[in-house]
Length: 157
Length: 290
Ligand SMILES: Cc1cc2nc3c(=O)[nH]c(=O)nc-3n(C[C@H](O)[C@H](O)[C@H](O)COP(=O)(O)OP(=O)(O)OC[C@H]3O[C@@H](n4cnc5c(N)ncnc54)[C@H](O)[C@@H]3O)c2cc1C
Ligand code: FES
Ligand code: FES
Image (tube, rainbow over all chains, first blue to last red; front, side, top):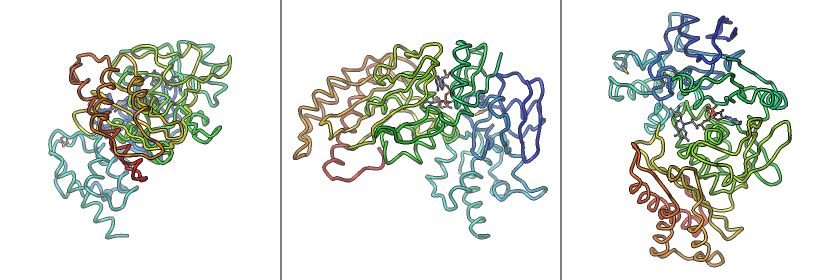
């Protein structure tokens, strides 16, 4: 089947989609957007997190056909051209990226948190990122990154 | 495999009547795991995502009517005041991403004994609204589950909503697991005070082949509580209540916990949640969370 979906502001079309395949598969294998990662395919790790119609979701748990006509924003759509989003810059500046496999999903989840809550407490940050696993960092640098992104956002607004 | 994408409930029911083997998909948080791991190859998927009626909630005959596909995140944000027990249960489901898509309708459709909405629905005496082209019926949630991952749905039926009376008293939900997020319950317990009916509702999760109420515990505590001039509960009463809740369970040994541990933990959860709810009742205030 054919699936039409807006990805990062651009209208995209995927053909020959098997109706049971996931949005994650469509993004990675059919549309060449390999930012969203595939680790568990069962909603446990969050590395496939994307915005679907403005709401973070595990793209591995969305059937391709459910995204028809939808609006998807992936990690590739966070930066403004060459200018990284402040969440991305904060992850770099704090050393919150090691192997990087969890990073795309964490960036989307953290981005969403900061959009919704301009001054999250540490427990709120932990709760918001509870669906994203990282095997490398031990999470402390990720906490630092989100706190820094929050500070930077507060400084500019 | 076919993919049906009805725009209205009428279309969805017609499609389900014609294709009984089409698997409904709402949030997809159960269905997609089965597809990704090749545990299921249905002839068709029936996407409920565009059916507005299933994504709305409102009041009907004094009860809150929650469309089957309303995600947990919205229940937490929008219905926490009217349905505190269900909102507490919803907060424990998976992770933010799972709560953004997973729904009570999907939890009922899957009918896992470990589903977290069930204890809260049981404690609150929820009713499940079920529809087909033949008509609509209401099933009390305690009669909805028929076996492990089985429910009363006929092949042509869809769950359209749950109906729950807004809370008239304190409600609690507690769940045992290895971490705060992303945990399938080792066991869970829901409790609701119904001062208007002078009774207490209960619900057990991960404790038997199906979610179930602890009827004897409910009967016992109804005779012990003084609703007119409420007094603090004796420890012996709390313990007896806990013991009766544990007796209502018929748990199994599995990777998540032993039957003996589950029984023990359920007695503890029951005793604590009743204590919290009753002191809230005494104090007139409301605890936000377990
Ligand atoms: C990582 C992860 C963590 C999880 N954690 C929890 C947890 O902590 N607690 C918990 O309870 N669950 C948990 N789950 C399971 C799942 O999220 C819940 O069962 C959720 O409520 C399912 O809702 P859904 O809308 O996604 O259902 P779907 O996957 O869309 O459907 C589930 C089942 O119900 C059927 N169905 C859906 N809607 C209807 C309808 N309207 N009428 C008839 N049948 C219908 C489907 O055909 C399918 O059989 C978790 C899942 C994942 C992937
Ligand atoms: S790949 Fe989707 S949550 Fe792990
Ligand atoms: S940086 Fe390697 S998994 Fe997080």
